Image (cartoon, rainbow, N blue to C red):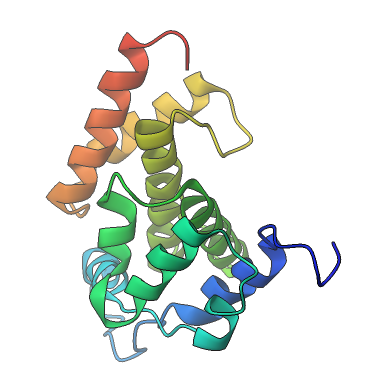
Length: 176
């Protein structure tokens, strides 16, 4: 992709989002299960955006307009739950939390559970709002995972609704 090319550069956007989402503080106690607290911290987190990159003219106008809203206006929950979130943003959010989950040494840790939940939330939002499966899995595998998430008491109601709505819509729509 040349510098004169005005198409979306996914590597630039990925690095923007990978560096732009504030990581929750590390002050949580290890004496109790912190999954719910950590998940709520991530969901309420704000974005720090490289405005030079956003205003570079390298992104389509609809995406530039959306990205300008991120700092101070939109939280991660807003991004995941807003039906107007561009597919590119959801895809890169999915990649961000895939990377976060892959960095966890213990797959049974709270951090891994939270990162995995947010990964599936990004996939669910893309499927629900754009009709696109962004993960490398079958629909049945995805539905099975969402069914497991629906049984977790530590997942906040807004993500439960997202998972439930995605299951309902997608099971009713055999085109997806």
